Amino acid sequence: MKKFIFSITQTGSNSHWLFALFLLSPASVFSQAYSPSFKTTFTINNDSTQSLNNYQVLVILNTAAPIANSHMQSNGADIRFSADSCNPGMYYDYWIENNINTDSTKIWVKIPQLLPSSSTTFLIWYGDSLATSISNFNNTFPTAFISNGNDSILSGIIIVDWFQL
Image (cartoon, rainbow, N blue to C red):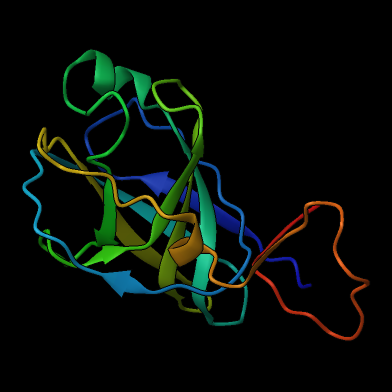
């Protein structure tokens, strides 16, 4: 596995977001009716010389502040991610791993493309009080391997985007 160096910069007006970035593997895009009230723009810089297509990135953000201000549902069901040129309608697959309503909520997002030596801007949308959750582990990690401890012996080359023993 190659190591890539990235930086992420907030360009929106909401200063309560904190981000960290890690890459794992491939992504898809889907749509659903949705009416958010808020959006924040973020930029990911791919400092590598390789194009990275359909990669999951770990986003760590503060959801406590927007929840406390009644800008986000307390369970995060109204969170969505999209390209910066997108109006609500086409969203990236994502999965809320844990810690909603804290300053360190972990959300894995599948970004369709990170071009080499360039910046990719995306949006986080929230603030639809009627939205239902579309956080989905299986869509975000379609080739996951999760063991219950009684699995057969694995051999050969196995490519997965989530591995859990």
